[in-house]
Image 1 (cartoon, rainbow, N blue to C red):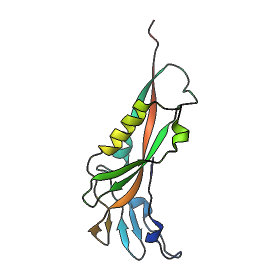
Image 2: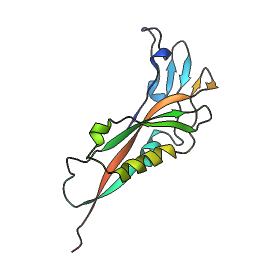
Image 3: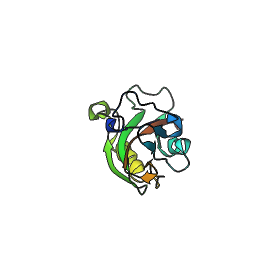
Image 4: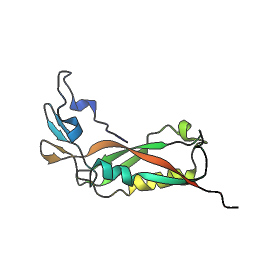
Length: 142
């Protein structure tokens, strides 16, 4: 999953139409092309997954299945200003520090993105990404 944070300042007039949003293009007063992970959204979903070994059985109710981070994709495509967006109260007691550290590392070390543009010029843009926690079950060895 991914979420996009577009500042409201990009939409000063309520009558602006969002056209071709799924393609990453927002038209209004300005033409904004959103930043893209190399290989697109599907490649990003595959990259932002952490497999967690679990004993065979049901997924425990306490397991958090995703962690949200806000990032800035710079005009050069680098990732900066990585911040945890999932409330810490939701994570406390539900996820290990090791998993949280790995999620942060994955986001911080993402490959260079295709930068977003406004009216054809590269620009720093805010973005929200989701790291998926994937339980992988192993049989107990006795």
